[in-house]
Amino acid sequence: MRKIGLMGGAFDPPHYGHLLIAEQAREECQLDEVWFMPTKIPPHKTSSNLCKDEQRIEMVKRAIETNANYMLSLVEFERIGPSYTIDTIKVLKNKYPEIDFYFIIGGDMIEYLPKWKDIDELLTLIAFIGVKRPGHNCAFVYSDKVKIINAPQLEISSSEIRERLQKGRSIRYLLPESVIEYIKEQGIYGQS
Image (cartoon, rainbow, N blue to C red; front, side, top):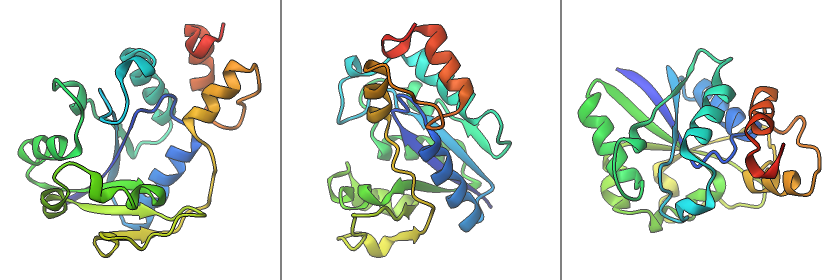
C-alpha cells in the first residue's frame, strides 16, 4: 500500500517550517508522498481572518512546486462547513482505499488532540506523526498513538510572517521566494 502523509493547515501563508516538517516526516516514515491540504474553514478560525481561498491555494502550489514528492489536495474545498479532520479522512479513505494515510502535526498540536472532533474514531482510521518542538512536551493522553520524530527546528509561524509584512519588515528566508513574489503581486497582507 502507498503511504501518504497529510499536512493540513490554513497556510496563510505557507513557509519553510511547513516544508521542512513535511520532508522530515516523509523521509523518516518512508512516505511515498506528502499531500498539502489547505483548510477551507479551520474549525478554530473564522474564514474572514484568512486571505482569499484562491490566494492560499496558489501560495501552496508555489511553495511545493520544486518537490516532486509534494502534492496539493483540495479535498477540504470540496465540502461545505468547517474542515474537521475526521470528515476529510472519511472522504479520503473512501476515495483511496488502497492508501495508508498519516496525518503530520507539530509537537505543539499533540496536546490538543483530545479536543479534535471524534478523535477516538479518527485514531482508528489513520496514524499520526508528531514532530517534536522545543518547549512542548509530547507526553499527553494520545502520545502513545503518535509516532514522534525529530526535525531541525525552525521557529517560523504564519502569524509572525503576516505581522512582519504589516510592519514592513523583511520576510526573506522565511518562505520560498516564489511565494513572496506572489504576496507582493497580489497585495496580500497589505503588501504592494
